[in-house]
Each structure stands twice: as C-alpha cells, then as structure tokens.
Image (cartoon, rainbow, N blue to C red; front, side, top):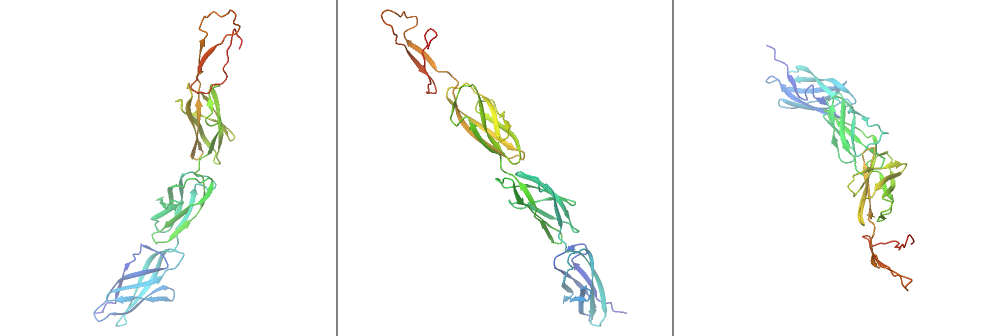
Length: 332
C-alpha cells in the first residue's frame, strides 16, 4: 500500500480575500504519515524566486513579497518534500490588489464657489471593495456614503473665508488596505456681504419729512441675494433697492415723540451667507405744545400803551426747540 504524500492546506488568506501591501503572510496546516515528516517546503512567488516555509509541527507559515501595481488573481506554487523524498505540489490562488483606489471629484466644479456647507461628490474605482472614504476640508474628516462607484459627503467649511481656494483632502481605503487620496482646490466663500449705513447719521433726530430715505452700502463678491431693512416700528422688513453698491429704503416714520428707534439691515449673498448692520435714530413726529398765557383770550388791548407783552409756554418731548415766532393779524 502506497504511503500518501504530504498534504498542505492554506488557511489564511482565503482565495477571495483581497491582499495588498508590500508583503503577505500565508499560513496553514500540514498532514503527513508517521515517520514521513516534512523535511522541506518552499513557495515560488516569482519565476525562479522561492521562500522556505517555517514549519512547526503540523503548522506552517511564510511571508512573501507581492507584485506591485496589479489587481487580480495570482497563482503561487508550494512544493513540499517528506523524509522519503516524496514531494507534493500545491497551487495557491490569491486575490492580489496592490493598486490604491482611484478617486475623482465631480461636484462642485473647481471654478464654482461654495458657501458654508456643500455637498461634494465624485467617483471611486477599485477592484476590491472600498469600505472607507473620508473628506476633510479643515474641520476634521467626514465619512462619505458610497453607492457603487459614486461617493458623496456633506461638509462644513470654517467661517470668515472670502472667496479663497481651500484644499479638500479626499481619502479612500480599499479592502486590501491600499490608500488613495486626492487634494482638489475648492473656491470657498463663507463670509457675508459687507454692509453699512450712510444716511441718516447715527442718533439723528428725524421728523420732517415724515418719509425718510435710508441709504447705505452693500457689496459681496458672490453676488447679492435679499437686502432688507427692519425698523422698530412694527411694520416688518422692507425690501431695499440696490443700485451698484448702494442700497435705499423709504421709511415712513411712525408717530413718536422723541423715541429712539433702531433699524437693522440684513443682507444675504447668493451662497446664503448673511450679514447685518444696525443704526439707531431718534424719531419725533409730534409737534411742540404751545399755549399763550398773556394777554388772556378776548382781552381788550389799547389805550396809551402802544406795545403789548405776550407770553406763552412751549413744550416738546425732544427738549430741542427750534425757532419760536409770534404772528399778529397774519404777520410774524
């Protein structure tokens, strides 16, 4: 009865598990007949290139270099010889992947500005599954979702960036632990419009005319969206008219007697960034209260006196009276 040749079994890695990197360790078991222990075993990992297996009892292991820059199935041959010089050959198939994932960014385009948040998307291609893909725009890595060969991630950019190119680091790791990355530049604008008041002046007293023209400046490199003025009169925001870098709003003054009123300008740009400016005015649309105290009403004036002293009281909530004049028979 013939004595069977040694039997070599590969336990790890499996034929379907992608392996990558510079080297891979293979391990498994040996079965042999009593008195026919294995005396040598080696694996041919390239033409004419072999590496001996380390054998401990019935277990073996070996580390071999992997061919670089390839994706696909590769065969390796292990030759085992026992004490009777009987040999056996085992073919090992491995799924080799030593290529990093190939990445692209398809949206947004590099010339299109993005605001404080943006949805980034692109493609990822690899022979092995890609379980991990992250995007980092400066606030830490964000895990992307992957569907087939398409990835996407919602990212948030730091504030205060005014139309500056910023790098986005996109990294992917495949099942064979190969890492691929790209660093495209994105045009980022997270700064709101530059806004200010020009007129009326701060703390100016307003009363006449009853409808005031409030003006200021507003600029933004991304293009303007809505510009509104909201004053403390209960009427709600009013849309501003924008011409070039100047905004204008007609403001009907509320009825008020020397009351401070604050107006808030709010502006957004085409990317959704916003900015505000405020200015306080004093509104006084109530006329002074005037009363003649002397002479009394219907008093008869005449006689030797050619002049008459007229006295009156004048009050106003603003305590800032202007001109006070007395008229007589249509004359002042």
